Length: 416
Image (cartoon, rainbow, N blue to C red; front, side, top):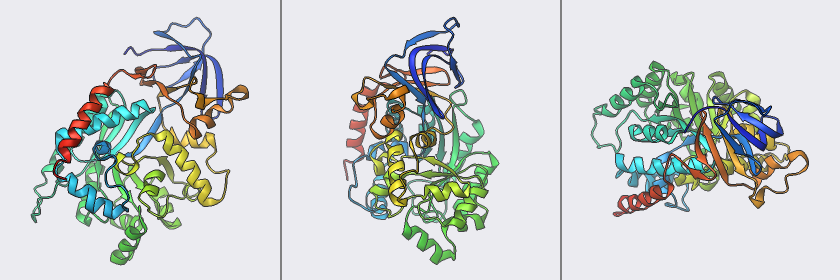
């Protein structure tokens, strides 16, 4: 996988505001320019039937939970967690985490995503998979042991393992970092929340938490603390300069202001929220009006069934328009820029796919077709390296990974 400038001939490309056509140069560190035809390049690509865009960025995942895809169907969030997910996860092992992550990353690459902000157990088995696959990520691990042993004393071994990963620094040529996960206010004590916050602050690491996902979570927090979840976290001094808050479906305007004041990344996960019947999703207009930094995430394959962020972009656009009775919210350009925000990488989509036609005059229908209809992902370039080419991932063997996942799922659920 050579790194260098590539010339793409006769390509459609969208970047930011407009669609361009012609011969283009893709530069190693994320830039592009029009080609004059005489530049030194490491590869020339026929772009006649390809549509190039920035890569998708998935800001809330539980990657190993591809193992749980399709289980616990028809349950609300708390029933799903307590009766399906948590009991099963008591059997999770490092080996299973690695297999589940391999399958997840294979899916990410095949659907045009080059970044994931993850939260799960055994981050030491997740980070290397991302690094070896060639994508980017922030892998957030917990400070508490899982599964809990029921004892009163926590030996802090999990925290020490996480601290070792944080202290060692990024891996994969800097593409993959480690961070800190604190699951939620209803599963973490004040001590655990602040333990995670302090650790993230010490290493200038990402701090990841589920926030105000359901109405019950919000009501229970207010009953117990006299404050809503975001207010409660703020009162503790929890927020750092690098906090990622997933869901934010039931937050007040005051809380939106708190999130914005801390520069928190607020992750909209509409498909998971709808599937688990949370009754509400993030209000994108109010969030953006508050100045909060909004991103998109799929959540895990257990609650979404998919890690395809292109589908999540469609869901986000539709649910926001539906909820606010306003068809102007999240038009194709704003939707795509939201889904790819911060991307330094490139993907191409198959224009031979009938779902991408008609292109429209000057390609003006291409982006809307991609968001609302779909297309196959052809190429993926990360940090200048080609990790998927003409519909085949070069860094992972999808077939072998799929077979391993099938075997692992049988072992994982043999007693369930």
